[in-house]
Length: 127
Image (cartoon, rainbow, N blue to C red; front, side, top):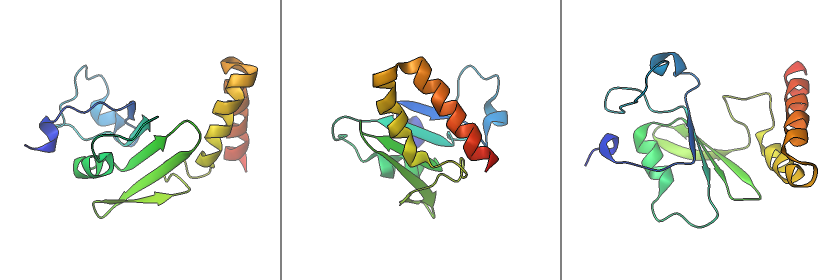
């Protein structure tokens, strides 16, 4: 069965580079539309299927996996993922710092942690 017809449940998918191609669409059909540019999975147990192979077959250029303590970034190159410390989409930002803000939100609250995260991103972009 072609990958485009398999229904998968991911935590969140984002269109970034291809956003203009899907803007305004209520339904996205992967048989005709491009795949998301980035998929974020929040996993607290081992998945039953190999998501790396599945997302690679779909052509999703970035796959982020968060397990509650660490964030792993996988970049698609030549139809295979390799783990990376930096996201090409968010290159100036140290993505691996994100779990620190998630942990901080449990102590100071989501709103305060979100403000701190935004300030951190602004500083990173200005460097």
